[in-house]
Amino acid sequence: MAKILENLYKALGAGIVLTVLAFLLLHRSVDHAYVAFFVRWLHVLSGVLWIGLLWYFNFVQIPTMPKIPAELKPAVGKFIAPEALFWFRWAALATVVTGLLLSVLNGYGHDAMMLKEGTRTIGIGMWLGLIMAFNVWFIIWPNQKKALGMVPVDDAAKAAAARLAMLTSRTNFMLSLPMLYCMVAQQNIG
Image (tube, rainbow, N blue to C red; front, side):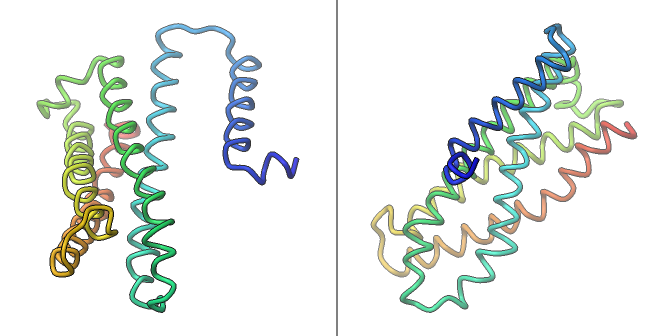
């Protein structure tokens, strides 16, 4: 068991195998309701990764970076941050794609995007998620590439890019709270 748990991808594979076993033991058939459920499960899974990393950046990495000695900062900037940002941006995309697909499968996509009565709550959550995903791909990621030295810029541009990425990440953190509220509220209280 330790050999599986010592390797991220083996542990992920084991989790997938256990999920398939749960499906085979509990459900065995695939109909429209199951497909919609499965897409919701993928949406929640990718959303947990996305928002978990967003909260990691805002609760842990951003406040801790000023306290890290200068000689240790390259470990974060060259190894941890690029890897976390890879998963962060792709989880954002997966969350949006599965969320939009789920809204279409369940028949409320257009009405929610138009903020029509009955779907307004989920629609607001969807719009907040889209704004946040836009921020990830078109503001945070391009500026993090500059801040981390993946794109060559002078020190002033690097500092400005780091600040803009941080402020946009903090904006996403702030928006994540009402976004999550809307997502859960629509499901539970309409």
